[in-house]
Length: 76
Image (cartoon, rainbow, N blue to C red; front, top):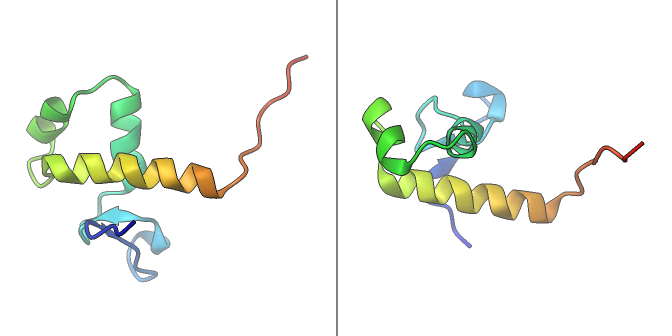
């Protein structure tokens, strides 16, 4: 899967995946969605973003967690 809207540049934001070379981390977009914001609300608050940016951030995040084993807190 190609991500043409996600950029990673070691000289920008410490190499954190960002949206289209902007200083806008993918994680920030995903967090806004997780907090219950709609795409329309995100775009209204951040006019530099586009609807496809939000969608691609979510697809990128979904793929990223498939590729890594995340530590989960054990019950108890």
